[in-house]
Length: 83
Image (cartoon, rainbow, N blue to C red; front, side, top):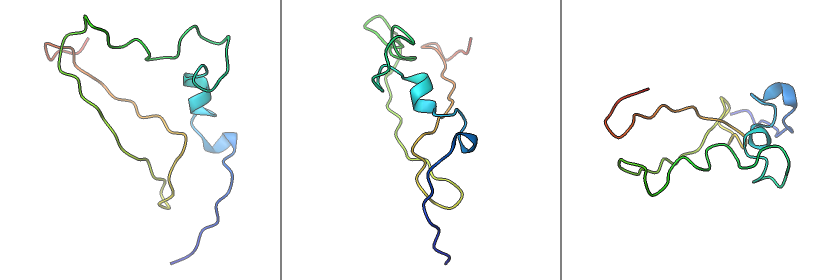
């Protein structure tokens, strides 16, 4: 098996660039972009439906862990319907 060296990602190799900075600047200590990070208020005490947790890891084609990725998901409402 060929050993692959680890190279620093460049903006042209990402889907952002720098997805975590663009979507969650407050979490990355970058203030003044958004009042709150995207997705921070998706669930509150009035939200109907079952709570789930999705976890996982993202690997590139060579098997290396991707450290800055976005996964797009679609979620039905509490009645099982999509808007």
